[in-house]
Length: 88
Image (cartoon, rainbow, N blue to C red):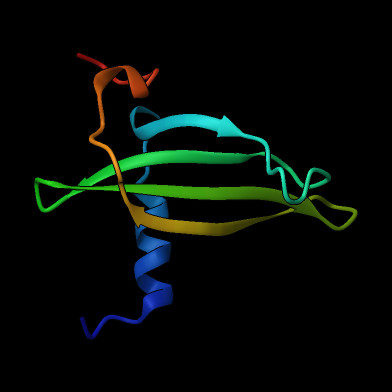
């Protein structure tokens, strides 16, 4: 609770794995922007959370910036088939 929110977000993004990847979606509100990646992560053994990010390249040297679009609780339970790279 006392942790700096920026530090918490940075830590959580660094811990994402390919097995938590769910899908890539086009941003319909901003179609000229890069696609968004959705991940699903379980916290406290039961809380299912969607994490949506967008990675963009800026500048002539391609500096990478990650935009965190959202962290929100899942409205429906995660299923195995939602995770194309999850191992059994």
